[in-house]
Length: 168
Image 1 (spheres, rainbow, N blue to C red):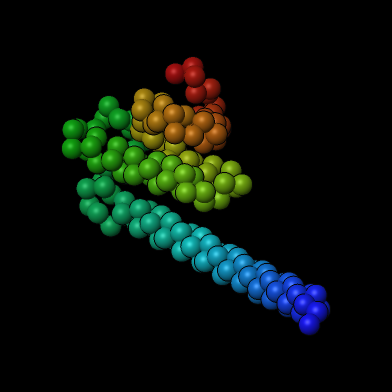
Image 2: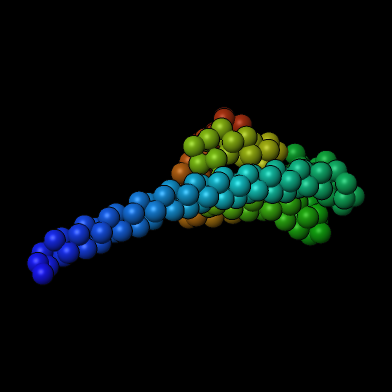
């Protein structure tokens, strides 16, 4: 009996089986990639919703908590005008705002939207105490964490005060 045709048929069958497995695996990779993309989009949506929720809570806090509300009303008088308790309240409140901005940026939220960060810094730098805290403490923290974020904050500071940040 001549074995060459049998060997040829078995090699063709093996090649075909290998091809079928490769096509199946390629299909599985495509499905997995789509599932991962959906999971990534879902995670991004969840992050955005959590960030917005935290921002809303943060903003409401200054109006719903009596101590914070009183201190917030005096924010244009500068840090030196506060007693120790008031100083702790306003600086803690502002630091929480900076922490959320840094965290958003670190997590990749709206990296291509500097206007978002400009808007957030405007809310923190719209008062004398916010500007003083920025130049005394928060600027160095921002620059050390993310120089690009520090640049956005510096530009916002300069727009609001009309003064270069380094001159202080």
